[in-house]
Length: 258
Ligand SMILES: Nc1ncnc2c1ncn2[C@@H]1O[C@H](COP(=O)(O)OP(=O)(O)OP(=O)(O)O)[C@@H](O)[C@H]1O
Image (cartoon, rainbow, N blue to C red; front, top):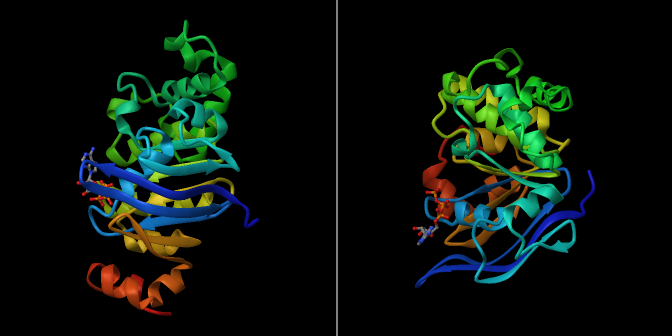
């Protein structure tokens, strides 16, 4: 792993009327790391992810990806550069099979014509890579299943597959475990652990066991500001973090100092 930042924000600000949801945030995500973003409800995590993916425009500040300014780029242009967001179940076509959905993601990224999009899964140039990605996320056996028939956790795996199909260098994951039972969460943690290192990941997640098990570095966001950034151990031991957030939210084994 190198320590060169793949993603940086400089003094990023996002205001909604009188509310400052991102408040002068300077964040750095190194190439290859799994960086988790935690913080209480309303801390500004989703607002930050939306600015990084390009769905929201910052009020002030800059976003650099691989050293280049992407602050004003639309989402699809960021995706072409390798900055991909996952977990928007709404982008799945419910009547299409899992394979077709991933094949479409491959096709969209490769910039092929959409003329034959219904048959994307039958085009070997698309189906081959799509199948490989489905295997990678553990959905190989569900390739021919319509997306609407997948369990909730499987839909989240499918979303991850669709993001991976675009060959991202950095994946933005906004609460991938939300709505999952313990077994599905466990499978997702295993999957993210396998992906870790191969692709840089910025993970927003409320499941602290998952965060502390997976993260190389953690940033604690409180009221749009970086309260602390460091390794899981440093974050566990940080008095300001314990006082502001982890003390009540995380007074369990994930917080115990090893
Ligand atoms: N489109 C919007 N318009 C106005 N206020 C917004 C908008 N989106 C978010 N906010 C406000 O910005 C603040 C940060 O919200 P955000 O959803 O980013 O927090 P979060 O850390 O993701 O919270 P949670 O953990 O509950 O998902 C909150 O006070 C929220 O009410």
